[in-house]
Amino acid sequence: MATPAPSSRDRLLEAAMTLVRTKGYAATTVDELCAATALTKGAFFHHFKTKEDVFAAAAQRFGEEADELFRHAGYMDRADPLQRLLGYVDFRIELLQGEIAEITCVLGTLVQEVHITHPVLREVCDRHIGVHVDMLTELIAAAKRQHVPRARWSAEALGLYIQAVVQGSLLLVKSRQSIEPAVECLRVLRRHLELQFLPRPTQETVK
Image 1 (tube, rainbow, N blue to C red):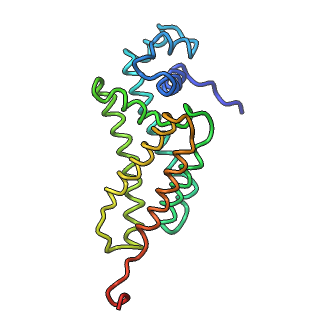
Image 2 (cartoon, rainbow, N blue to C red; image 1 turned 30 degrees about the vertical axis):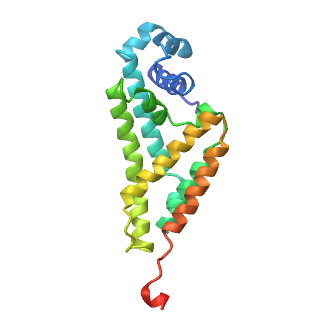
Image 3 (cartoon, rainbow, N blue to C red; image 1 turned 90 degrees about the vertical axis):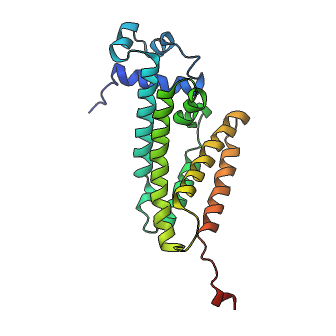
């Protein structure tokens, strides 16, 4: 059975996700969104009242798709929660393939530009980044209970740290126009996580 053609709305959302990565929010016009989708302005305003509306919906769509991707990736089938967490990092490295504009994060790219000027867009990005951190926190908390239940660090803080490394590594990709800095950052992150989950020696072991 043939795959149905994407709707006009879906085409506009895909164009917004592409253009925010390649041009940025401020530099993208409604005319460019229409040109990228071969739609008229009438079609655009049938679905969205403003440019901000289409980018808010695009950020929402990207966040939902990312949540679906990571929650159902193959590493989630591993029995050991630590291996699921390490598998997440490995999967992040695997995703660093293709053109730079294709691998950068719509949420991270958008919020860096509009966090002061467009609070509605900032809130959408923050909500979905938060959903991703919550997923990481669940993995970390389960791994901590199993491997290092007495560790003093919090699962929430480590989840935020992982997200900060991921987003920071994508900034380096943009500034250096190369995926290699991101790959190296994520490899260091993996080693850091392995160390965090090593059991600490007890006093009896030290004696």
